[in-house]
Length: 305
Length: 188
Image 1: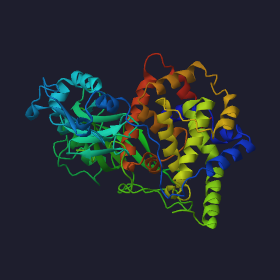
Image 2: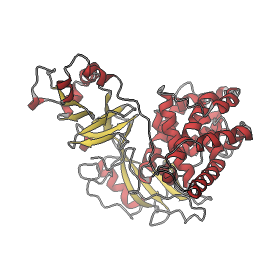
Image 3: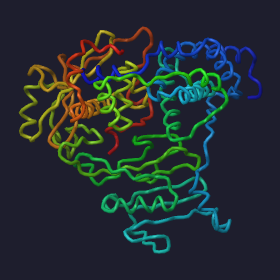
Image 4: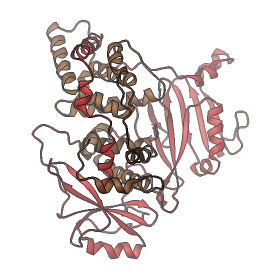
């Protein structure tokens, strides 16, 4: 745990000290001001005051007859295409601006990868605030559209939604920086951006039956697949939290819970001393244990495929 | 809904006040550890609690409320970093008090090296590591803050730690003497 311990040392302040920085009267004043806000008691009104789409929309409407501005405008970026020189059949990236925002659909991820700088420039030139991210992934995902997100994270974000399986609709009121992500091959030593089960089709241990087996059972499989393990040991700590510790080696009798793609030539094995993964005991204080499906994802998960 | 019944409104206010009292320190601490600028922290804290007030019906009960607030603070902070600063006026006094705060710690070169290694990581990795090391959250709690699955947290954390260790080992980061000197992981 040395890395986390060292990180803890550079925390500039703890919660109690932070609270002590503020006088009781200022604290009370803020609470009073906040709760005086006309929240419209509105259950979940969640009135997010969002800026209108900044430049793109204005640009588009400027100088365009109103009747035209109301209809959708499609910009198609093919290998040579610009508005006016459209070849939809070969378009790698299709941008559609409309009253609700902008749609970005990836038709040919490989073509986008091959000329990504140009596609980025074109998006920028057209005032579309959507970034193209290329991320290292394991072989089955190379050259595929991975999904969309914002601020460097793949996943659902209010204001963004999936369209056309390979694209995103960015609502006009969205205020972050939307991104679309495409998988590229990883370099040696480079971590994959999405962890996929190493036993999934096309992955390095495709089809292997490893869950519940011991490390001694699984190591030969890894060896024949040409991959080395990295261990993630799961334990319940004194606070009842399930925590992971990383290890270069573990006892042969440890049990394997799963294997994840990590980087070329390496997999991460989840292991522990018990046949089944440890589970945090129910917390009387009501500490959360969200189920894997109860919350919308806003981060990379293996479900993106 | 025109006017909620007064009783409901009072009850809502009371519940908000206890949420606020229980979480002011943790939320301010969370923000200060990430911005180290008192005035910015004041704005982010005010916006976070304002969001909680406006969306009070979405705030989960018990300890999960804190995680929910961390999630809101995280988003507010991200917007703040992008320059979309909101000064609602709510935070004037808080800002004035926190403006005096000087959090730039006098790090030894060793700690500065850890800081540099940490800052070299992508934002998402930093946040994961910080939620463990600074807020003391476990994977399930982090999953609640980030609205993702525990499994995703586990895997991403594993990677973030690997990257962090690599950064600590990079030339110019005098990590080893420090690491060897740590007897336990209690936050300072």
